[in-house]
Each structure stands twice: as C-alpha cells, then as structure tokens.
Amino acid sequence: FFEPEKIIKFAKKVEKSLAANGARVAIIARVGRDRKSLPEGVNFTHTALAVYSKITTTDGRTIPGYAIHNLYQRADKPDVSDLIQDYPVDFFAGVQILEAGIIIPSSEIQIRLLKVVGSDTYKKLHNPKYSVIANPFTLDLQNCTEHTLDLLFAAIYETNDIKQIKANEKAYFEPQPVNVNPLKLIFGSLFVADVAMSDHPGSPVTTTFTTIGKFLEKFKAASKIYFIKDEG
Image 1 (cartoon, rainbow, N blue to C red):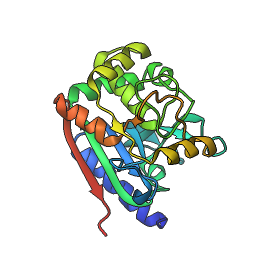
Image 2: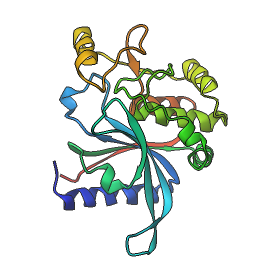
Image 3: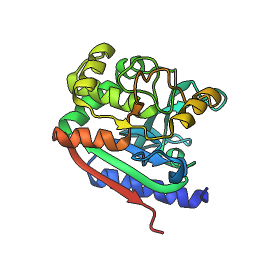
Image 4: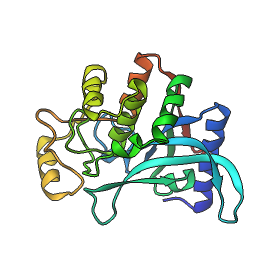
C-alpha cells in the first residue's frame, strides 16, 4: 500500500524511537487491515516482540538493530502459523496504515522476556493451530497477540507450564470482547479458514495490543505506551 522508500523511512523512525527509549524488548503492533473492517475495540491486527540485537547484514557486517519475533499465518494455510523472525521493514511492509503501537515493559520484565525469547519456552508456547479471534484462556487455538501474551506471562511468572500460564491469565488478564454480529462470526468460521469459534464456550473474547497495555499499566509493569504515526 506504500512505496518501499516510505516504509523504510517509517521503519527507521520506529527503530530510532525504540532505541531512544532504551528498549531492549518492546511489544510492537501494526495495522494490516482497513480499520473500518475491524471489530470495535480492535485497533491493531498484528502484535510481536521487537528485540534489540546484533544483526548480520548480507555483506557480512554486524550492526545493532531490532529483530522482530513474530507468529505469522501461512499464506497457503491461514489456519496454521509459524514462528518467524524478520525486521522492522518486513514488519511494516504490508500495512494499510503507517502507524505503530509500542509498549515498553518495565526493565525487570524486559530482562525476563529476553530470557524467554532465548530459551526453548519461546517455541514451546507456540500453538500452530491459528484463529484470528483465538480465545486467550483456552489451549485449542492461538493468534499472534495471544502468543505474545503467553510469552509475557511466562516471563512474569518465570514458568513454561502452559496450564499455569492460562490459569494466571484467567485470573489477572481482561480480554477484549469481540463485538461482531453473531451471524457474521458463524458464517466466518464456516467459510474463512482463519476464523474459528470452537474455542469460545460463550461470548467470544480475544487478546489485543490494547488489552495487553491495560494489563501492564494496571500492575505498573509498563514503562511507556505510545503510538508512532507517519509524518503525513
């Protein structure tokens, strides 16, 4: 939706902002769909972790920058996901709006998140069965934002026990209700591969960038939450 030069400029703007705020690990979000098509209360479509790293370039140089640790749907099987590492330019390449949501956790949470990302826990907490409105309190399905939430709770409670993580999430995390016409959800789950209702015993709820931010704010575990928009 944007010229490559514009995406590169915006991605650099985000990286410089993260560095200026001293972020070793940040939760980062983008807008991959038209906001008019999103359910009420959902402002971003994809969430991941930005980790300050030493990056090796194609010509063999090592430079500092941010690697993005994502859970992505497969293009040919949208109900299946993979863990993929890319970089800010890749992260923003397909956005419909040049806007980023940024959550910088507290220093202690950042240190713990680094340990999680660098351990087997990162992969262990991945469920490849994907749904765009996955219920954060069940083990059946997962989306990118729920995976980020699971990593966050693994870091906070220093555990990789997914059942314990889900119990803690249910006790302390308030999800986003999915306010969409029930018929639309039912037909979506029937005809669209990345929408499923099987993990919602009652009214559908999901994880969002906003609800993660509210959780961290409530427990005073976020050092900064802000948004970056294109200059235009």
